[in-house]
Image 1 (spheres, rainbow, N blue to C red):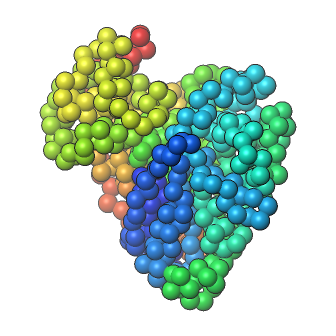
Image 2 (cartoon, protein in one colour; image 1 turned 135 degrees about the vertical axis):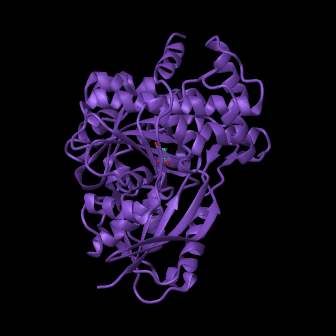
Length: 480
Ligand code: LFR
């Protein structure tokens, strides 16, 4: 038939949005219906998500979206709500930047050595992987009462529909999925005493996830029956699905609070070398593997801006563009930058510790951050090609960072490859297209990508200068 309308709920670490996508023959459009802040809250017990506030934002967004043929939800990964036997939420979900997992990894590795954990789950070490969070939660009263765990998008879908499931792409970030079989890693869970019965049954992107409850219809002013469709509910999986690439010879960088840089593969890379390089094998749409590295991303910049009282970013970026290049760089992959607070000081300390000049102004700090991100992008793109045995000709940058022209240009310079930037709202596009496909209005992954390349204005950045400067900067970091 004609075009369909799809509501994409896309929740990021600092804001949530509800976008409406129209998809049909020759039509692919996305408009924003509602945007709302997502503000982490620090209470005495730690850093928490205001999930009821987020749910209220979702309801406001659905009201603003109006009549749609389906609703899909994606968000950041790993975090979750715990429910009691009645299905009621047990407390505010813990933020992945909370410090509760700081000392958990050693305990886990004493039972399942890190190398075995990698061979079985393919996940890079990150303190916040759900597995470590569950081990940290063990022994708390809240955890003792928990009968069910729902990842963030699945929790919101449950509130909208009354039905529970665990969407696969996001489940793959728990470190409890085997990326070869694409189902639960039972042996790992057993050895660590993690009850996989906590999780609701797996759902694949495109699966039905229930209908909006009558109360939800009433609250949002919607009529009729409105299905919720499971999408690639990990925001990064939705974003990678919406990389407007042609063929296989591309790398992608999903930019936002994080930079997720890597390749799309048919099978996981589970070698010891890959583990040492801290590459992850998360699951993507249609049997794909997202082989990537987590880089701190624009978080470094956001936290600096917050520390400086939110100055005008445009002016700072113009000044940073004129500042000397590659004076000092920090390791943007270092989990030392994970926690919030004191970011300009922490960056200065890292420069001092590696014997480099300490940035002497906000613009110099911004330049250091962007050079460091571009350098980390280069290293990830280079390492991924080597470790996976796949060469690329182009780097696709998608997500919020596409609005930062300096970051895109520096990334092209550092990689020595052209950068194609866009779409900025890649996660929402991926979300919408998977819903449309479930209703027969979009084709396979390659077809989805073709339709995106046509629908979106993309910016192209050619590499400038000599990539040896970046290699030398990398050596400066590695040497410390
Ligand atoms: C990006 C992202 C990353 C994940 C991080 C924490 O929004 O989903 O892929 O590693 O957030 O969940």
